Length: 438
Image (cartoon, rainbow, N blue to C red; front, side):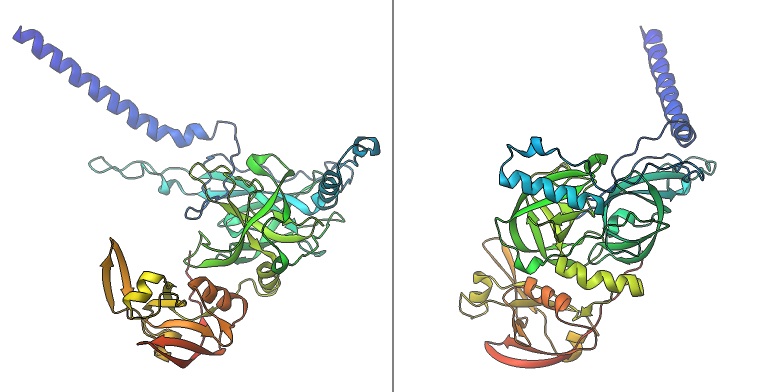
C-alpha cells in the first residue's frame, strides 16, 4: 500500500509540472499566434463614466487605401424613400425619416489602430523565472462615430475614441475611406477634432442647434455606429438636463450634459444627438451601464459647450479652462444644520483648497472638521460659495458650469461666500487648469 501511495503522489506531481509548463509555453506563443489570426474588430468606445475605452484586438493594422482603386460613385444621401411607402406614415415618422436622410451624410464611421508594445504584456515578467524573450509589438483596434464640422475637412468626435491612436480612418456614407490626423484634443470635455485628408466634395457639415433651449420630453435622435453597425438611427427623448459627470479621461467633470433614452451603445460615441429639425444639440459620449449596453441612460455633451471648444481646438490644438483650485459639494440639509445654518440654505461647500491655487491665494477656506451623523461623514467649517459675480451658486455643479461656460483664465471674479454664518465677498483672479500629461 505504501509503495502504491508513493507512486500515486509522484504521478500527480509530474502531471502538475506538465500542466504548468504547457501554460507557460502557451503564454509565450500567444503574441506570435495572434499575428496569424484574422482580425475581428471590436468597438473600443468607452461607454461608462469611469473606464476609458479598451480595445482588445491584437491584430496587425489594416492596409492603407490602395491607390488607383475606383471608389463607389458619390451618393451622399441615403436612397430616397419612395413616396408610396411614406403615404401611410404618420407625421412623426415622416419627420424622423427626413432627418435621417438629411443628416446621415454628415455622420462618419471612425476606425483607429493603436500600437502596443510587447513589453506591456501581462506575462512580461514572472517572479522566480529567468528572463523571457522580448515580445513583438502588436496592435489593437477600436471604432466610434463622428460628424463633419465644416467644409474644411474637420470632423468632431470623442477624445476617448482617438486617444493614443497610431492611425485614424474615416469612412463616409458613400463608402469612401480617408486617413485623418488629430489636430485638436481636449480630455476635459472628451472632445477631439480630426482633419480628413483629401475629402473631396463629400463634406456635409452639420447644422448647429441650441442646447440651451432643450426641454425634458423633447424628441431627439442619435445616428452612429453601435457595435460597428454603421449609420444606425435611434430615437428617444431628452430624459434629463443639467447633469454633471466625470469625463472619464481626465480629473474634471463635464457640466450641463444631456441625458437621453435614445439608445447609445459602444460605437455611438462621438456621433451627433439631433433635435426634430435635424440640428446638432449634443455629442453622444457615454452611458451608465453595468454591462456596457444601453439601459436607457445615455449622455451627450451639449452643443453650446461643443461650439465653444471646437473652434479653439481647430485653431490652437488645445483648450484652456479657468481654474479656481477647489473641491467641494452641494450643501445638504443635514450639513447645513450641523454648521448652524438654515436647513434650506444652498451653495457649494468648499471641502479642500489646493495649495497655491487662485482660491488659496484669495483666502478661500476648506473644511477643517468632520463629524459622523447617521453613518454619514459630514465636512464642516469650509466656506460656502453662494454666488460668482451675479451668477447664483446653489450646487457644486453650478460652480463647474460657470467656470466652463462663463469664465476665462486671468479673469477677476467676485465670490459671495458664507463664513461662520455671515456673508462676505472675496476677489479672486482665476488661473488656468493644470494639464495632466498622458
